[in-house]
Every structure is written in structure tokens, then in C-alpha cells.
Amino acid sequence: MAYTGGPLNELNGKMGISAPGKSVPVMRLIGVHKPKSKDALVGLIKYHYENDCKCGVKSQGTIEDFGKNLYESQTGYWGEYRYPLADCVQWEYDLFVLQSLKGDLVEKKAIQILKKEFPKHQVEEAKGYLDEELRIDILITNNSKEKCGIQVKPDTFNNMRSEVIFFNKKANKKWGKPVFYLFYDRDENFKNLDSVIAKIKNIDK
Image 1 (cartoon, rainbow, N blue to C red):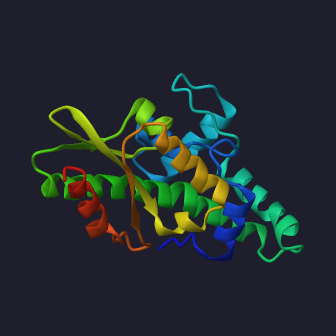
Image 2: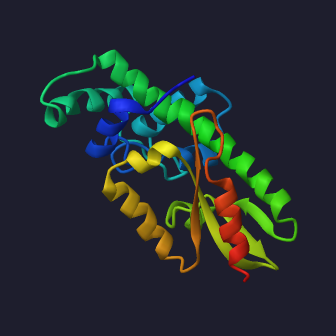
């Protein structure tokens, strides 16, 4: 199984290698084009680097380019090359392809769990402005009234550089409603599901 933690995760986060503006807004790409395989997603990222698509998504490079960026950033952060280029390319592949496809599946899993937990509410994938600008993955409504949002993140999100975390939370605040973070581990198990459910229930109290 792909693992995108460890020192390269720290390097990637601190140096902003995979920030959407420096790489590709991959979850948006998946949401629009719905690739059916890993190779299809790799091809989509390359296509959106070399071409202008009417979907509006633009990639700043290919998976190989992102790996090279990670490789070259080592000297600026550690003062030396600790990992070979091949490892850096593989790490970015695992992040953008394997983890992103997993993330899409985990979001769907979270939606199903929350639907069962809140049968009188509407639980659905956030789209458009909510997703792209406010960084919300799941929207929960009650009688068509927006109640709260959920961001589904790997637990490694907490190791990202502070600017990335701040950017997400600042975007959330623009909405003016509660946004809760649901974290999952490398085995796709939710780590704070009970806590998030309790917070959602507490809104009505």
C-alpha cells in the first residue's frame, strides 16, 4: 500500500510542492473527469498541463515534474540530497494518484456513514463554490437549510506546512457555518468519526 508519510511528506508540505497553485487541483480534476484507473488519472494530469481544457483545471506539470520539484527541494530544506529522484517521483505518484483516488473513495464512504447516522438530514458531496473556494467536501443540510460542512483529510494533513492548514481554515470561515475535519489513517479508518458526529449533533442543541 502506498504510504505518503515520513520525511518526504514533511519536505513536500514545508516546501509547498503539492500546493494546488504549484501542482494541480487533483480532487477537482477527479470530480470533473471521473477517471476509472490510475493510468487514466496520470494521463489527465499530463493532458491538463499540455492543453487547455474547457473544465478550467490547469496543471503546472506532470507527475514526473512534481517528483523533480520534490527532489530538487531537498538541498534547500536539508542541505543535501537524502532521496534519489526515483523515490521522489514515486512519492508524488502515490500522493497525486493513489492517495487522491483513495481520498475520493473515502469521501464516498464518509457520506454513506453520515447518511445512516443522520437519516433525517441530506448528506451529499459539496460541489461548485463550496468545494472549490470554501474547501468543503461534504455538505449536510436539514430541510434544505445548510447545517454544516465536512472536510475529509488524511491524518498527514496535520503535518502540512502551517500556511496550507491556515488557507483551508480561512476558506472554511468564509462560509459562516461550522466546518468539521474528519481524518482517516493509511488503512482508510476514520480516526475521529465519533467526535465529528457528536459535534454535528451538538449544533441543534
